Length: 421
Image 1 (cartoon, rainbow, N blue to C red):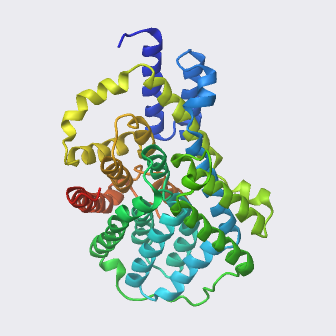
Image 2: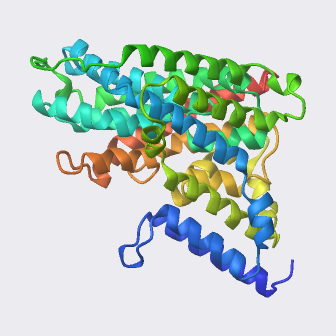
Image 3: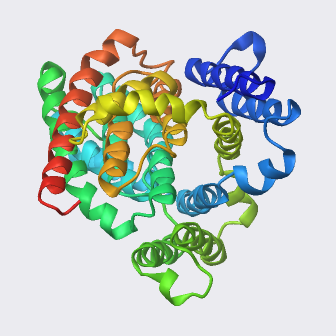
């Protein structure tokens, strides 16, 4: 490659964008992740690295954007029926003891995150769990950490469990059902290990019992909830069925966004809330973040810099995938998991490598406070009642990440050596 002006400009924009994303927010610049991504994309176009027409038509992977949008609308429709509030309150009422609460919270957070995106579960569960444990005079830290670590772990089980898995699904073309079969044991074992580690770390805080007097289940819109849950079942069925074989012109990578959008439209139609209420719940900033990153990655890919870096790094990975797993964990914490997956799209091929990327980039989110968006959501929502410092979180995050990643790698490697993956 030659160091032309576009190459130098794209490299500087790429580095600047990823630095701003990694530090999450610089107050005096009034930039957060979505705005940093947008600024990087605009600079790529203004400096002539990526033609505007290309940025609009081919740089942005609209399949991923539409998949995210569809799932957000479905989740918003469920939220408006108070479903998530009902589940979190039910867990608190049924628990009776801190140990049982920890187990139920990990199980519910993990399973629901696989179905409805981990960030959403953290947003909806945190206020309810925090208020209840404080009223019961329990230390909220173990339960908040359990909520976020299990949300990250559980989300690994499906292609729609978290944003980076959505990218993996679009890029790899792995069928939804096949991915679920590979990652189901990884996620379930990860949740068990998460419970064992946190129960051991916080043994003293989990002793005794607590009173749930005065805590009652919220009223839910049952007819609307049943209808929307039926839509969720149809969406899951659509993800599993080979629709690309039945619908003319539908490619494999387009099935997930089409089903998600169809489900979103149906959820809005059968729900009782106004469509504008559901649309208001959509995280538009996350969609801007993705769209901007696609353009930034398109710019750096035009220079040949990333392929050159991959050629140097590839010998370190090895055929077993251990090196790729460690590299993914490290880079996911350095630049965050979604930008990392976008950057390595051109490097990765084969179902085994892609499942390792999905597993390692997801579990890496549990390592530090800033490891995933879900972590920052929980800490931000609870910052006034339960301050969790970097070292305090790392005490739990490090063993959870190390043990679950090792277990996940071992399971996937065994599948690979057996010829199943």
